[in-house]
Image (cartoon, rainbow, N blue to C red):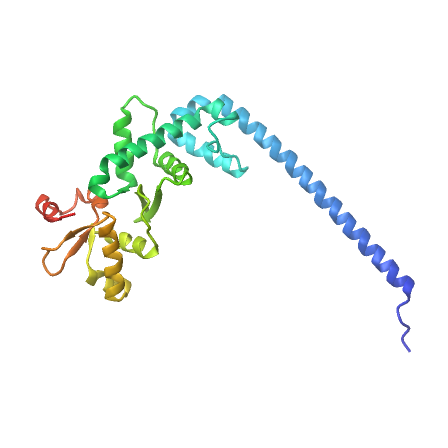
Length: 257
């Protein structure tokens, strides 16, 4: 007959489990301490690197991208505040603040034409033109970072992925996923029709019309009611992207906001 497990054996087993648990806790704490030390060392080296190469970080946009990526690996955001170590050392706070102001100026100047949507490429070209050839170089990555900071401020700025790039939104219009999909559909030709949306996206007519009517209402789309076949809904934000394609001035003139 098999003997039962005694109280002493149970107590011994529980004691062993407690010791293992305690040992595991100590090991985990040691690992956290070691990781913290490594992180502090990395951060210290990053600060030393930034101090040594601050001129190149300021002037070289590609170098600045790589530096931002290095910072991200340890959770350091040089743009988090306009004050503090990073801002004082590198001047990046002022750089992105000034860039944000220039982005706003360009978007406001073109709002009457594009309704508050502009391609990232056109925004980049216009910002560079406004800064002059002797100004600090600016990359599209710099623009994206500055726009993200503007977005946090609740100023209506945001980015919509379209064709491997972005449309920059500078007005607080309510755009849901349906609107985004239609904007992406219009990227190839600069316009869409109700029939195209129904065929490609497999939507009901009412859904397509609802989305297009909203874009018209917000000034983000223009209606060409005289187009052959059926009305065409043009996205003025995409006009610059079509400048090298087969879109004539007469076609543009026919579009009425």
